[in-house]
Image (cartoon, rainbow, N blue to C red; front, side, top):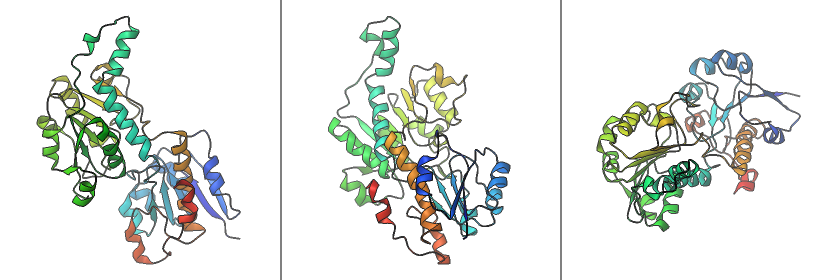
Length: 341
């Protein structure tokens, strides 16, 4: 019997029980690894039939070393660890898990917005240091009538838009790839990025990280923002040009930032953000709940099963160009995923 070799390049969980449950087939050999470098990935994945990836680099060099790989799945929504073009050129399917944490991330973005607007984090700091005085949190403004600008308008920001509306917050969005009718259904106005920066009191970043979106929010965008604006990021740190954000905060060009992600993670011990009272930080946790973690890991493994055991394109295929080869059939895997519906 043919043995499929499935490598998990790296993971930050205590075990691989969800992956093992899905890949529990006598034809599959699951190989756990903890790769950090290209060389380490090449050594363990050279003859892999499938790869499950978290942060380890799957660069062009790595992908060109793969002799048998049919599918790469990634723990998460973004696929910035994977050279998509190189994978597509070699006919390798790349899949993600785009829907596992819609509620978690939109809830977290809302929590960061509310924590900033009501000065919850700052109040907590002062009270625990013996200061019982509301004046240390001034100014606080009413939320009703404020404007939230969403950079990107996929599933997560659409969920966030629904959650802020009962608070009386107006929502606008910048997303050149979203049809106007989708925004109109949610009573959200699509605007240019410049208009969004000029009009918004809160700016929440939800774009994917690509070569064209890296540094999307930079010096020009900060120069257009209101001096009371707050930037929220629960997507990817490099979407914001960090030096420009630090300058905008230090010079009080904007009021503050609430960040779940930063440019270099984990954050360095001497990072300026750590000394700023106008910055709220959380440790890239927006995606997480017990339920979302189980769903993420299970669905990442199911993408491998789609290809190796069912000879179907994975349900969450990212590089749809590989379909031109016609090597696999269209997915019929909805029933396998129904447990998460």
